[in-house]
Image (cartoon, rainbow, N blue to C red):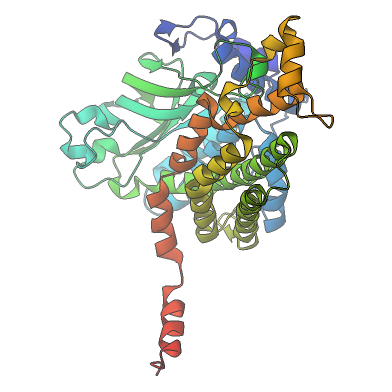
Length: 458
């Protein structure tokens, strides 16, 4: 296993990482990259063991409903890159089981890769969403054939791929990029049915980075995002060679969606678990700022907080239902129920904006106009700010301002905007959740009840 410092050194491997148009030689020198880099390094140190045969205990799948439930608190404490590494390894293992009867030649490669990845203690990020070009056209019909990642040549020892994957969180901070098809492919689109593990430092790989990390201003004005951030990337594959032992699917269009579907089993639990915690956090901020403003007993404020509590409770109930009705893969790995997971994800994503609106309405305009915490350091300003930001009863101006900055940082600034978009898009948009619900809902039972109520039951 690697220590945090050994992990940092392992990233100095010639990788092409860019930020704001610049090729980055030292990620620790860039605040927007250094904070998440150190978070991943801390995760290494947390699980480090000096035993010669030790592997990270997190990268194992739950084998029962209780293990699945017990995994939630741990998932909430993992850095994102370790969480995604776990998901990636579980994804390819489940995919291997589904390929057994149709494409067994890939199974030894997958099993060998998973074992090597565990032993080497590497970090892996998932690359699924393609550039896609014109969304109304299939991959094989695009004006630019590279709109979806594809194989451009094959040889006796591997393949060469070209294209780009978008929205890849933490790509610059891992060792491997787990490339997999974003959707089902049709006959004639064999070149797009490619799944493989690509080292980040492979020639031809270029990684851009965007971040909601505050790059300017006083860190105290960003109490969350200054300490918890993760870059999102476009991963460009410019004729990248991938050796056969790292290729897990090549040309079998009928199995192109296996990897994406397998991934869905593992990313859902973390996604809805975070939504539950986030909903509770919004309730807490709403109640605290209402108390600080002196409006906690105002009827419309209480009603809005009630709605926020009901929303948070519904999400928690959905999470519990997803776990209680967990399913098992043929290999004995447990994952949350599709129906309850997707309904919960839909509820959380579709109502997030409403809950944020309630919070802003309760808090007031100082969410975006409160003085900087640096202003409190100014000896001339400090007494004025305490006088006019205080609301009495032991509520200091500094205390109330810190609440405003927390609300702004998490809901009304770059980090809040990131949440607004990713809550909807992560793991598939709202339409994807509706499709899963439509597929799994017991419509026959509902129709039977309707016929009975109308006196039409036979």
